[in-house]
Length: 330
Ligand SMILES: Cc1cc2nc3c(=O)[nH]c(=O)nc-3n(C[C@H](O)[C@H](O)[C@H](O)COP(=O)(O)OP(=O)(O)OC[C@H]3O[C@@H](n4cnc5c(N)ncnc54)[C@H](O)[C@@H]3O)c2cc1C
Image 1 (cartoon, helix red, strand yellow):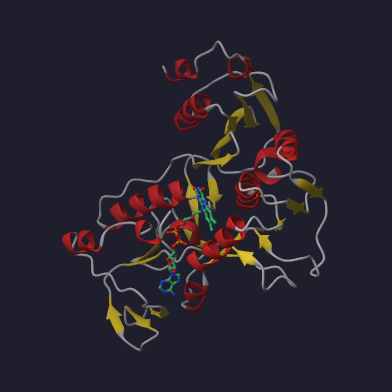
Image 2 (cartoon, helix red, strand yellow; image 1 turned 90 degrees about the horizontal axis):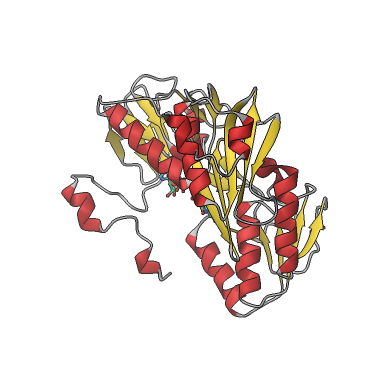
């Protein structure tokens, strides 16, 4: 995609919304006492309400300081050059980013070796069975997988590293706002300090749906929770109680997941495992807390609604492709 198509909105839309957009303006301090923010330039700006939406940063690996870490645009452009030249590529980390990079590189004819510390790709969220299935998909497409293995820093370059992200919380910590694996906020985005809100990847928010705090690193949640927090700041808040949802395209395989990546006790499969379309439901204390589908968009979309409605559904109904999940909503 060309650079000029990447902006979220054209500049004039901010003007129409009466939003003053300051670019290249890094905030270096949240002065809670005087209700102001301080910019790197020294400029101060007063606020009545504040929202911290500083996102996250890519986790760095020791010995791989010169690797490609996907977060900022220049890094994406660096990766594109590697792919366009069809260079041999090493990928460290077989999570979503690593797997997508590997698939994109293979489709452009690069030789790819991917290292993963766990026993399977994407195991943390999807579990060992689906991880094993995806290992097979990458293997069939010619990726050399080195599982349960951390590479030595001498690994031949170029290397793309995707080993997770950390919430950007430095400003909040320095200001004394409560932080624990993300800026802690409630279901309306309120932090521990009155009139200070936070939204997006930087937060760990209370989910009334899962009845625990969750941290999500996907744009659909950052956007939807962002809307909810904005409304709350405008005094029209309703708790954000949606089930997070994301998808990933790798070759001709579309992986969709709804849920918060929480630990589960058992899984139920719908369809023939390994022969798409099929889905896997993740259950805790008999209740569905997640669903992953392989080329099975409808099942994930419907299961997500069942989850959000906390509708009762049996294991047999989940496993039966003839049972329309929407019936559970009636
Ligand atoms: C390579 C990659 C691929 C991804 N692919 C997917 C995907 O396919 N699907 C999906 O759902 N999600 C994906 N994600 C995750 C998604 O991008 C994030 O969940 C989303 O961008 C989070 O939005 P946010 O607004 O919370 O934070 P960000 O989008 O990170 O925005 C935070 C902004 O705050 C700015 N900022 C930080 N500190 C300061 C400061 N002190 N002063 C001023 N500004 C500051 C940053 O420059 C940044 O622009 C991907 C992420 C990466 C890195």
